[in-house]
Length: 184
Image (cartoon, rainbow, N blue to C red; front, side):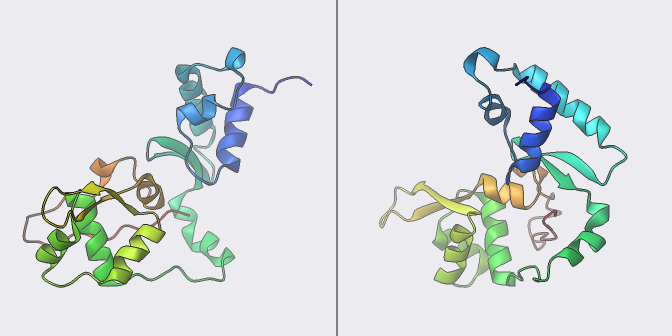
């Protein structure tokens, strides 16, 4: 059996993967003596991106990795493939997530102080179950409250390369902009 071209292997891996793949994850697909350099993989990804310029799919760099995804312009048609409706999240959950994303790491009491209301256990549990937020440690204060921060899954779900891609806040007193929509 002959080895397919690097471009075909990378394309197949990106297509088959359920999440964005980092350069290291792509390199790990190869035996040590056949492992391509990072620059070679980046060049192949750039080639694929150029190939997809006029197509309905694209290669997106997200959360430190790469994935093949449907272009946003195709959303009205592709969304009809799924009978299920997109999950609706409460304003409280989205406000809590936004606070964590913009001001991390935060404790639950810090979130409550900023929001001015109690954060329900179910909201925190949902954020953790969705793997958008995780506990990264504990504050060195009485009670040692948990410190929450966003995860790579959060970045992938909302199509962000890094937290720097979050919408900029207009002014400190303005409500947080929560118009993030997940790509298909």
